Image: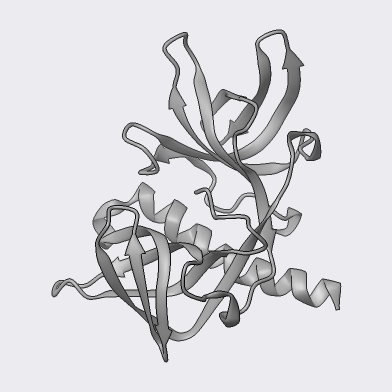
Length: 207
């Protein structure tokens, strides 16, 4: 049963990462948008969300849509060879500082690999990469990430959200639930998505 649940999560999230990650490398292919906010309602295949910008958005959920949750993890869970996604910002003192860390299941290693612009905050980037080194030094914690064509060392301060994927169901999309939705905007402004990441057990999607 656990193996089935893991594969269900992986199949859902592989597509999520493909949308939120690989699509960034070729933004001209389609207008991809990321919605962050709270559920207002789920009525059939229409998910209404109050976005973090304060606007109301109606998202048409595609046939066969998937939902996944997030669960807390820790820096101690991360070891060399693991695959992670880290949103970060340049620090005034040099290098990058993490805004959030996502630890991928082993079966997803390599998905969306690279480092590209991200819109969690202005000027932020997302790096999906294998951990080449994990150290703790006098300046705090840091992870050295290796990906095709590059390497980046990112410090992870205390209190930065660190999560992994977890099971979730449609029932978790209740009013007030935190969500992250990789969606597509049509020429007429209509939004559609096949995937929703929802906060469960008090853990909100930090990405």
